[in-house]
Length: 349
Image (cartoon, rainbow, N blue to C red):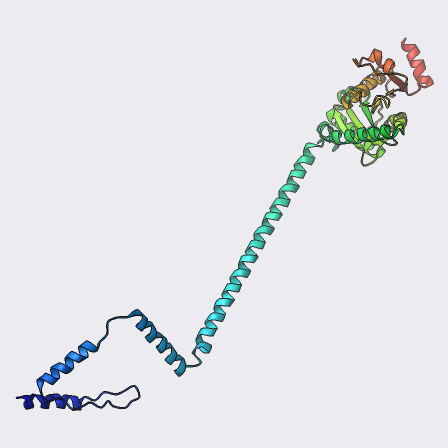
């Protein structure tokens, strides 16, 4: 019986040759002639299969890669190297795109910031200008005069510490100009004519002073001029210069009509007194210039008055800015009245 079973196994073994990786057939040993040997062979094959081992699988993979490199030495050059180059190029392009995007964003932010700053400056400029005449307004003086006052105070403090007397070109001169008989102009020619008068007077005043002096629409038919960093001795000359310039104007109401006008001027310097520079504030100086204007308006119009402190006239601690008491603390100057004005005054009396 054993011989009859051995023959078929022998036929299977010889009829099914296997090829090696090299292409050569395996050589099988002759089949055993007994069943015991067949069973033993199968048991030995089963016991020869090892269990799953990860390290062994890694070794197999590495050996596979080594064989792949051996058979295809140009694989990295033809496939992996271009892929790596493409990845590096994409990374560089991404970085450049990110940098460009960030630069554009920063540029857009800078442009927007500059636009907002310009808009704020424009709005601030509008808030500091009189819409009718285009001159600076009262708000501008209130916000800007403080730094000028500090500069003047420092100049006087420094010269006093050095014992050099009074500084040169360190004063502020306040001149308030009021157009004479302005209400009859509005009543006779209309408010548009009055606006033309105000605009042309404002333009004329800007031509009389330096570009760093302040020419301000003070309110109504009044203008305030602040001559900056100038000697106080020039106050009367400036007041007369303003009065004469307005008297010489011909105001164009329209293409066919022109009128003549005059103005009154009141003036006072800051500091009001060089001997007591800190005794009277800027607001009080403007008030003194306004009192001087009132005196010019009530005297004859088309004239000017100025008040200036003197070393021989000490300022009391409790100062009352009363028009009747001004001569006690200040030198009063005015435009000499002409012969015609004197005759008119005598006739009025």
